[in-house]
Length: 233
Image 1: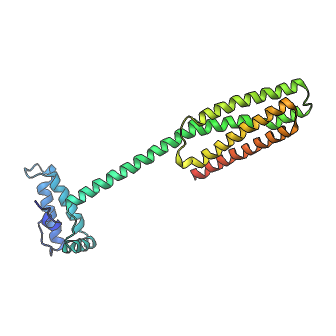
Image 2: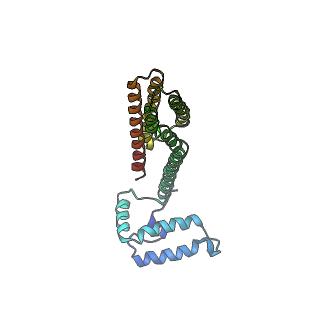
Image 3: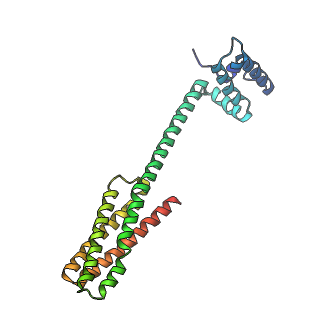
């Protein structure tokens, strides 16, 4: 059975006046309304009536609909319902995808970014004080032992940070943040190695190189924080 057009649904002529359309809609709505307690009650018919009246009661939309009708491309209620359902389905899918990404971002920030950021800070923040204390007398056994203990702690903190960083993939919207953290961890690791070598052979070149790598790591950490703030904006 062919779908009825809006005029047929409202049982009016295509030349009907707005008053005639309104009158017919009221009569049919009362006849088919589910709350009317009549045997003719029909929810699907009410949906069709509402869709038809929504178009024909608006002069501009009616004019556009009449052109479609004349060209044989009018929108039936069935097609309208199908497109509505398809649009709703697509919207729900996009919304679900957005919600999933948001959850991934929040998890990554709380379980990866924040703890790694804190661990890096605990490694690089004391470096200037440690070097200043050691500079009093690099050949003093107690001072060097204290410096080596600091480097040992750095190794343990770095290991924790690397393990956390690789514990879950970073969300694509925060790829820039994750990349800077990755390079920051690499600089920290290389810097520790240079400082450990210095603690064994007292060659100042390794001390200066390690110190510079920590400086670069601090800069990368700052860039990661800036990238994160820019993302939030």
